[in-house]
Image 1 (cartoon, rainbow, N blue to C red):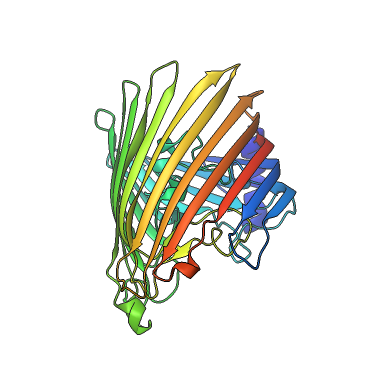
Image 2 (image 1 turned 90 degrees about the horizontal axis):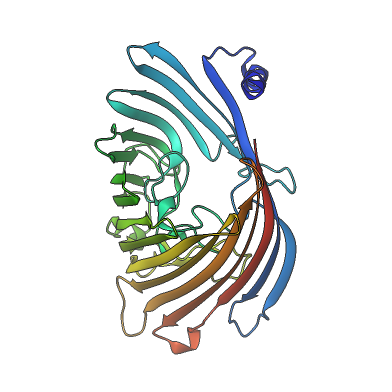
Length: 383
């Protein structure tokens, strides 16, 4: 009741008045102590060691408002407005957006749900409709540990602007999803060739201890107003499968993705290293990357908490290459972590992860093997 009253008060501050059958204020704050060792494997740069306070290392710090109104005959209208912020400084997660994590309005009933706005793509573990959080024991966060294929996927783990998502009712544990974005990043003209558009279809099955997800999605790249190389790129396509099975004594996670014509692979959360932080760009002059990513993990109840371990592998090769101009990336990642909940709202976590990349060019003098090590100790409080 208190959270509902607080939410109405907040809405009143924005709009002067608020009328809703059910409005809730929610969120979480995540602080951690974070140690990173980064080796860019560049002759002119030494390896670095940093220790710092970090916000959102496990789960992005956020606050949000959500609510529904019953229209009768089994039909409801609802909304979700969610903001990300840096808990250690108070800064907005995205200075140009008030609700950068999610901003949606939906209608649901016996026909399922239709949602409009900004939210996570199906081939991610983000927000209301991301399906891949079930493919790894660390779900969406844990900094550089992993996030259910996040760091061995391509072109993925994004939020779409100008999007529509349809979710069917559940049939015997099976739910089907369809999604379309008329302008992925709100640049250019919606539904025109001067902007990237995206679409995908996914499914999720839950039953008898088994959770399975599958997503096929594509990005229709901008072809007008781009340079000659970029506009000739074929559309990106990814096929992702994964899930988990609960053996009671342990839960086993698995997942894999095939990708083609990906602009970028291997984006990480590490501090700037000129190699890992922004991923590897295959757009020019390679016309994208083809490859795959695989992940396997386990979660085990230990001393009232949960111990998790994860290993992943990715391989990406340039689509167009010559003997004098080629590029490939291989990645290996391993992580362990532990969470313990003091209550439904407060928990602590710790993790250690290691990532090793092997980047090869036709000119072997450019080859490098960057790596990162990260250790976290933090606390989360939800409200």
